Length: 162
Length: 193
Image (cartoon, rainbow over all chains, first blue to last red; front, side, top):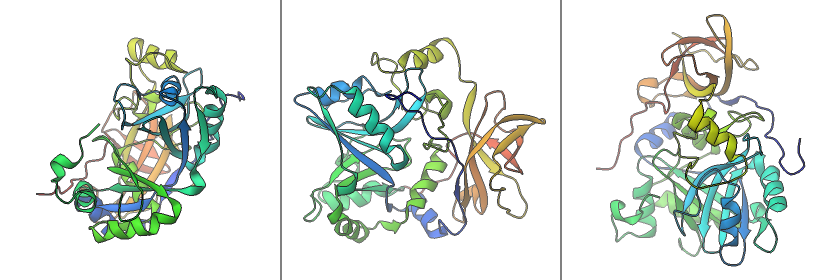
């Protein structure tokens, strides 16, 4: 294992037993909206100007620059040989990029970001303990968020897709 | 702002297994959850998001993704996880070479377990065989209760298997017969009018 680019963990089988997801939750995924706490780690990459975006652009498989501010893209950090170290979502907010990765990948993501990003351009900090992340899924998720955040708008115009 | 909470809301693309990610200070989570449920959302455990991930055919670190996984093996092309026009990034040579000059030897596929009486695929046994050859491994398994459309009341799963195994093939996976299916799983959703 490289010090700078640790490898992904050994694989195990994810298993959801019958009692773990009740039928009504499946119904809500198909015809409603479900909110659940996401099992993720949160790392903020903050730098002056566009430093954070520029640095992550050189590490992530996806394009975080082109979509502009407010972008929310999925991608992975790789080893130099192209193997996945950790996957996750990156959200641009001005001079900060918030990276959410599976909790199992927290240390690997931090290791790469802290060792690969020059401090003069950006700094990575672990915000996991002070940040909660909720995922909202389901066919009516947009309608629920619209009702909550901007009730004067319709689902079709409230959020544009990336 | 949602109520008094400062919440960052991000929306995913169409292929993702969830629609929104909301991040907020930890001490404001309960209040935000309460507002969401008041607006019509159903509060569930993390397993609900995990089932959504499996149905959407997205990879998970330490299940579908191990120390030797390259992005194209776990549907990064299909789910929009890689850009071929952005320029250089760490590991890009391998990813680009595979895209422009080759193909991944392994693919992430769906499994629909075929049992008259639903029986759990064996735990601790992840091998996938086809025509008596070892062709890959099971990575995720889930019970889909009634309400899942055509898949209702059955076991489904994800597997990383050799690309030669066609969609529709019947394989032996985790000790059970299973049919290889395309991803995402076909679960009809009911959209707002």
